[in-house]
Image (cartoon, rainbow, N blue to C red; front, side):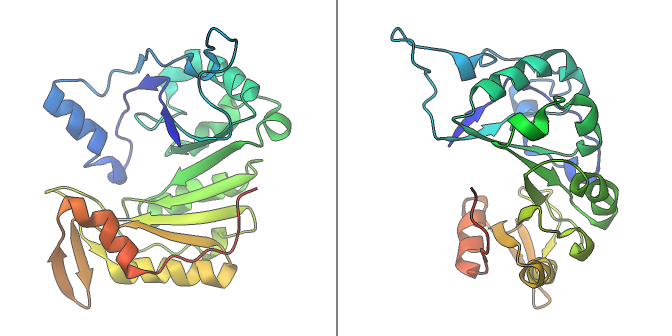
Length: 242
């Protein structure tokens, strides 16, 4: 697994963005997150060493644009170049997450379905309202590997009508930080039950900084958010990635 951020910066567009960790971290450093800029990593995918070999080794999962949104408007001028590099690097697998899935059709390559089978896309939803807005679009797209990301989960979500055969996995997680909104464990279990019903992989990525379980509110240290989710031992896997 490796990170590849051809640009950085983002804009808040919905309730899930309210306490975005990227904005918080940038604020502490005096960086304006709303300024979208190209990074020094831009051509990293196709850089070669003196032997003519790719510097980025084959057979890796590449987390694409995790310091921004790959579909953000300001990056339209650069994205075609990145698509071309991704196509060239068919020896890698790519994953990007987006809250802007409505832009996918207008900015994806015309040959996406044929030549980008190695790209996995995660549609991020935080509550029922955003799920009902984004997921009908998402499930209609010609993407082979689709993930639904419910993180930060800030309200109950029903996913039944969206869990078709194309959805590989649903990932759920709470919000982190002093201003984090509560995560109710019942919401997590409800989504898990739906995934089991439709035989879709389910992964509980992290608990929230503030967690409600059995009507009791718990405060969880940031360094235990992922480990506490693992201890819950509720992940379920039906499908293997090709």
